[in-house]
Length: 245
Image 1 (tube, helix red, strand yellow):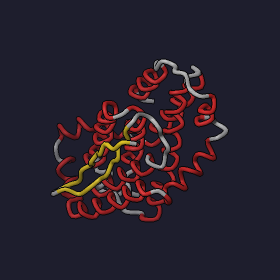
Image 2: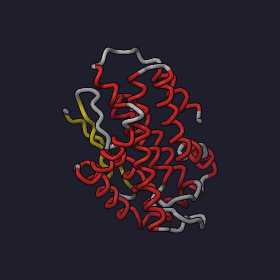
Image 3: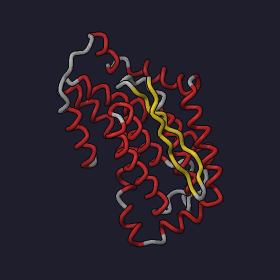
């Protein structure tokens, strides 16, 4: 568990308890988790947002593919930048992200905080959806990594990190989400500096993470954030649109 993960847990657990309808407790129940996962998987194919994100991510990955080697060489060729990005390989690890999600969920039950349980189950559900998609694609594509390893496409570190970032965005809004997205982008960049992935791997991995997070039904706040990856000259970008619910 990273320091950031424990800080997140502490902040969530410290949120003041608010009165909620009794029925809302079931939205974060452990017994209901399999059913919610089934609904999330269904929404991956039946709702527009995840499909649009994956389509946009695929287009962006294709657009940046010619710059794959250039991006890896540029980030890995700078000793100072490589050292700065070293922590990303640990922060973005799927096991770390998954364990943090499970810990938030468990802490919510331990302190009887419904808000924390809701955030925890969102993180767990989205990470599980992401795990299935990412690992299935890795084995299906079996692309060679820049360092000679296997299963490069898509980047699991990037997808897991963007899952967390987008779930936090959905629950807490842009003020939290912008920092979470910055952290996810840091992790994605670290995969290039470590020669673990190509640029197109992290671009599509990021899209997989966003699409997985958007299979959730989060009803927090008056506005929703629609996130779309898109190609730009020499790279890729993530556009965030604020829309009323």
